[in-house]
Amino acid sequence: MTLRLGRQTFPDDATLMMAIVNRTPDSFYDKGATWAEDSAFDRVAQVVDQGAEIVDIGGIKAAPGAEIDVDEEIRRVRSFVGRVRAAYPDLVISVDTWRAEVARAVCLEGADVLNDAWGGTDPTLVDVAAEHGAALICTHTGGVQVRTRPHRIEYDDVVTSAITDTVAYAERAMAAGVPQESLVIDPAHDFGKNTFHSLEITRRLGEMVDTGWPVLVSLSNKDFVGESLDLPVGERLIGTLAATAVCALAGARIYRVHEVVETRQVVDMVATIVGTRPPARAIRGLA
Amino acid sequence: MRVVLVPGVLALLPEYAGVTDPVADLRAACLEAVSSLGTDVTVVGDPQGERVAAYLLAGTDRAGAEPSFLVVGNGSARRTEKAPGHLDDRAAAFDADLGRALREGDTDTLGALDRDLAADLLAVVDPIAALADLLPAGVAGEVLYEDDPFGVRYWVMRWRG
Image (cartoon, rainbow over the protein chains, first blue to last red):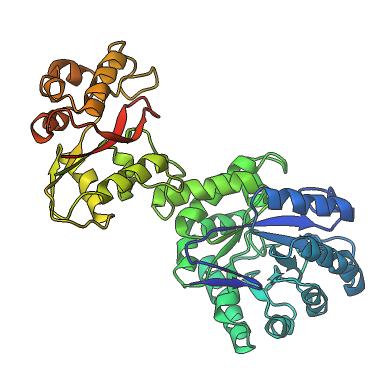
């Protein structure tokens, strides 16, 4: 299905890199490296140069921490979205927020995508997406509260839960007026999930792809990789890329990443093996 | 009569296409040359050469009832250390002589090519040798492409007789 992300559309065989840009002082991976607005802007320039089709700007880290109210979140992301939009008129700008008020503010600055990492916590977020023509990422959290870690959560079948909840969210968004072509589902690795859940989601990602909804995966340097390989943050790239390859083979469309270049290479290599993308240039044995 | 020579480069075939074309210049020259053939084309080539010819014929609009021949062959594939067949010191002289004969329409030379040496050098000359019978002696060929970008000698040429 053709994907419409705000001002851009993408054919159904396109894979997309969504580069993470944190406007936070405390996110787990970069630990505030792009907290300063100019640093975040430099990060945008870097990932655009690396070929990212989408930037995902977030003003609040996912893990528990200091309370960030609506006004502070808006302070962190609204003007920054405007600055990025002015500098990159064609770039797809996503904002990682669960709050409708924040969503409305960034849409007015030119955001294309609302990445609701907390799975529909704010029931009016869909209305903001519909009103502004923004795409919406519908994630699965297993019903946990925002900014909480999973604690003794279990599922009868985590994949069924992920499919049921994300598709229901997407259908609710459609009913609110968001076009079908602007809805994406995301199993949300590690959100409301222990490592075994995230591994099973990865192993069975094809079942989510089979729903027909475009699938986003957010794997980058997460704890399920770290726990699988017993490696700390900062040493999880290879494990992340292995998980990326599995998801690419299953047909994931969007990859939310810290490392754009490495992920693009893995996704392109898998697509080339599958046969949905030709080799860049082939002459060996053919001259 | 119209005659065209192209190399049997498999990279020309759509089933081996990449994002970028490693033989874009060669492809353009081949299509231009084949475009100048008539509608009634006899292909002279080995099975792989016939596939390349079929691709080129399918991709060109041609007109005219003149008898036309599309010959698929090439020089040595052992011209450099990175060539498909590695370097053979005899390749340069072999190709130079063959190239001269093609340009000059030297049908005597074309009819007396050393097939054993050609086989050693991975040159595809059996179809080229057929030119000795097709071409009137001394009709110069027009060179549209002459290069060895991958250590294999290619010619794209055409003759009108």
